[in-house]
Length: 486
Image (cartoon, rainbow, N blue to C red; front, side, top):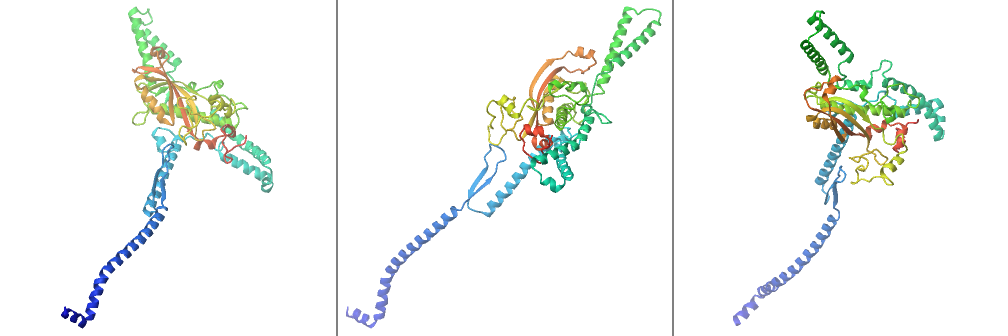
């Protein structure tokens, strides 16, 4: 013990340092643990605060839906340049694709582009340029300004301006209306527009009855002379053989005519009774019809007939696009064509028509963004009305003699030709022997008479600029750029 105390006294620094080490190690451990806990708590609090700030700054990314009733694609995340670029690029792609679909639909409906050519259709163009559309109104406005003087014209009240423009419009449109009449009636060297529709079907009438009768009469006389030398009457057997030969010749003439055309039809199949509301122009137009509204309706009717015939042409075309002849074609004959007038144009205001069709309430869309439909109007529910800003509807009928085995192909071809829907179908038997006596040879196929109800849709994007003022007022289309005075 004395030796230990002596060593401690001799080495006090060592003892002090040893004691410090012994005391400081636990103290340092305790102190470091406390300090570490404090630092971790402070850093965690700071990190949580920053994380909360980041999360509160999240962005709602979305890809819009271009189809009514379909929800957009949404995604919520913190701002991220790669995600932002992805959504921006895909939004642009979707918008471009949707715009392309709309453009193709409008072009196809009008008869423009490859899609229309694939179904053997050409562009719907007015017979007379400048009669319809905004150009004629712009020209009338400029003519009125020039006549009155630009400053004086601009200073006029709106009603006074409208009166001057209407006067200028009437002067500009008058010669175009007369030109339109000449084109509709095939006057002054203009081709017959209705005959051209039939020519596009390679349509024709049966063999000429008068010429055929004379041919058969001449043949009978020659054969009688050959057999009897003019010295006696035919025996019963000779008479029977001659009658059979004459029947064979008559049938041969019918078959020969059928090999020249693709179907039987003439202008007489088109509506000509003005009491029905729609008729082709066959006689000089009266004063009531010599205005832009009637001219436009004749033009629209012509486009509609063209689309109806396009379906028939598509049905009769072979794989190479060429029209088959009567015996091989599914559509043998057009019996008649019917077309209803634009709903409400001559029977009251559109509000009156809406009241008659829908009662006190207009239809509402089942899916937001879609055009309202109502089954009380038709099987499809589509109709022209002030509540429909997308398209207009024409309704018509085709009565055809068709191959019964290929009737389904004919209906599908008609619907492919444009935005056409078959809404009704009535089938009746055909007395082929009775028709054959009138010169209609249909070939060896079994045929039926099919009366087909059609609904044709015209997109307003391309059609509305041609609307004259009366039609625009009926449909409550407010667009001064294309409104024409009457």
